[in-house]
Amino acid sequence: MNANADRVPWRTIVAYGSPGVGAGYMYLVVNLYVMKFSTDVLLIAPAVMGVIFSVSRIWDAISDPMVGYLSDRTRHPMGRRRTWILASVLPIAGTFVMLFSPPDDLDKAGSIAWMAIGVIGFYSAMTLFIVPHMSLGAELTTNYHERSRLFGLRHAAFTAGSILALVSMQIFINAEQEGPAVARATASSLAWLAGGISVILIVYAVIKLRERPDFQGRMKSNPFKAYADVWRNHHARLLIIVTFIENVGSAAIGALTLYVAQYVVGRPMLAPLMILSYMIPSALSVPLWIPLSRRFGKIRLWVFSMLLTGFSFGGMFFLPFLDETMKIWTIFVLAFFAGLAAGCGGTVGPSVQGDVIDYDEYLTGERKEGAYFAAWNFVFKSATGVMLLLTGFVLQFSGFTPNQEQTMTTQIAMVSLYGAFPFVCYIIGAVLFSRFTLDESAHAEIRAELDSRRGAATS
Image (cartoon, rainbow, N blue to C red; front, side):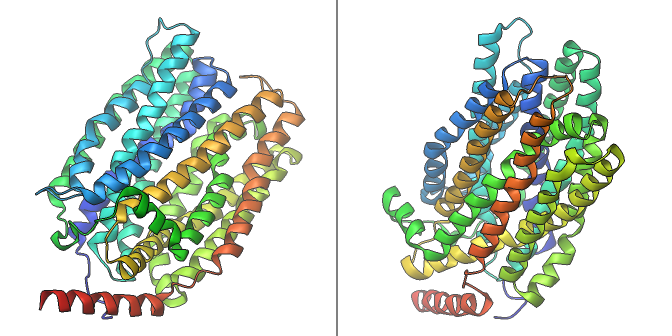
């Protein structure tokens, strides 16, 4: 296939990636701070928050497949994806504000109920956006390497939003030092600002992007057959298994970063810089991974990123046994290499998923990006829910006490989830994914057949 075939213009890449800034901001704040905001400011038990996050994953078993399937089946002049993306605007902004604006007069039960509704509502609203948005990305181009370029720039935008969130994280940490009332007011003000900006970015994308009309109406299956097709696709099945293993390993990283900074490293004020040392190489390395994927192949490059991630976080296990200076140097260096690996995975991962969807069209004649990205999104969030539930109970039963110096037992429990467990999971994921066979040459054969069928249908 011609390297310039189905090339994506820059204006489309910018429009597609722009909502990622707001989504990246919100996801980082929710994943890193809601647990700590709930335990340290609202004084909700960690195990209770772990149960709330786990229940939200159970609901995802219904919401993710439903949104994916309905998105595939939607017929609308605006398109089957942008309709859902536009519908997500107000729910995303509203639930994000809700999470950080609990009324001051709520009792303990009321606070738990408020946060439960906020957490479940936020992730549900994000499903309305993420599944159609990722599906649209796979439709904007069918070129093997252009997909890496498109999703790579989306990853950079998402990471840029996460970097902006670090400014808020520093403000949150400073506000906590001044007491719960200041922390509440600060979190609420920033949530309103972020919600408003996200609304603008999503609406901008909806206005500027255009969908391929030939893909609309190409999904005829009932929901059970659609998701059975996903599982029968052996390339997709392998990706689902690897995605679950990877995200089980990485889920605790987001939830525990602030805890590790405060209770293991002993320098809570360095937490935003630690995260920044991960985010900057993740975003800035995207232009590096795109040409490398052309030279070495997306599959080998993704396997490399899994191994690099595993060894980077695996080194975090030794933090409690180091002196303070070595702790700081170690976590910054390892976070840098983990960020490089994240840039690679964020660039080539969704691109490979798009190739797998082309293989499904080859088998079934349908275009059901929504079903596929719903499956991967559900697996991602299910793995996160499992680990957040485990993290909450591990903290609770290892003797964790908020805002106090932790015992060595508690610190080891933290770094076991933060370092040793991700190491094992990413190594297993890399070994399994090395068996993936849908490379560039195999994809070229599939695209040639699909293009031939399309030509015959229109002639």
